[in-house]
Image 1 (cartoon, helix red, strand yellow):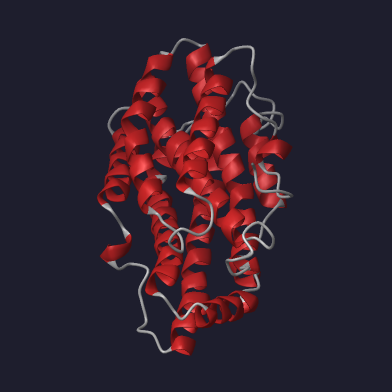
Image 2 (cartoon, one colour):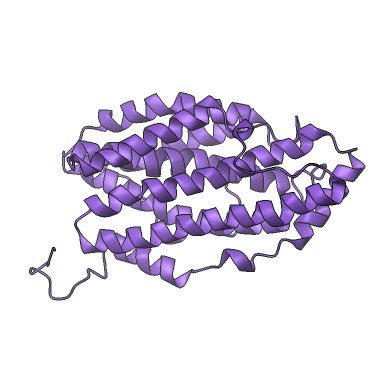
Length: 307
C-alpha cells in the first residue's frame, strides 16, 4: 500500500493524469446507445446493387474483426501496467483506460451482431464470425504477441527502460499509429461525402468518433510518460526509436493487407502517409524539449476526421 504522506490530499488535481481521468468520467458514453439500424439498411442496399461481390463485404469484415480482436487484446494486455504503476494518479487514469478498452470491445462485438449478421441474414449469406482466423494475417498476430510480452515484462522488471518499451508498444504504436490510422481510414471511407461510391455507415462513424475520443486520452497519457522518461534522462531516445523501428514493418504489413472493398475507399498510400505523419509528429513532441504534448481538447476532439 502506498500512502503519499507528502500530499495535503490524496490526488494531485492539476496533474495530467487526473485531468485525463476526469475527462474520461465527464465524457462517458455507452456502446449500446449508438444507433446502428441505418448501417445495416445502407450496407444491404449497397451489396444488392453491387451484386454481392464477396470482396466488398470481406474488406469491411476484416477491418471490424481486427479492431474487435485488437480492443480485446489491449484490454487484457493493459492489466500489468495497472499493477506496475505506483502513483495513485496514474492508477486512477488506468482504471478508466481499462474500462474504455472494454467498451470498445463491446461496441465492435455489437456491430458484428447487429449489422454484419443482419446483413448476412438479409442477403442469404452464411453467418460469419469475427473470431475466424481468416481475418488475421501474420503481421497482425505478431504485433499483438510482441505487445503482450512487452506489457507482461513489467511484472518482472519495473525499470524505466521496461516502462518505456511498454508505453511505446501500447500507447505509441498500437494506439497512436495503428489504431488511429485504421479509424481514419474507416471514417473517411464510410463517412457521408468523401467516397459516395461506398455505403454511408453513420453508426460505425459515430462509434469510431467516440472511440477516437477515448484513444486520444490514452495516447496522451503514454506520450506524457515517455516525455518524462526522456526529459529526466531515465531512458535514451534510442530506446523509443529502436522499438518503433522494430514494430513499424508489422504495422505496414497490417495496413497493406487490410484492403477495404477492393480498390474503393482510402487508398493504401494515403494510409501509409497518415501513419508516417503521426509517428514523426508524436516522436518530435516526445523527444524535443521545446515541444509539448498536445492539450486535452486537441487530443479528444470529435468534430472532424484528422486529415
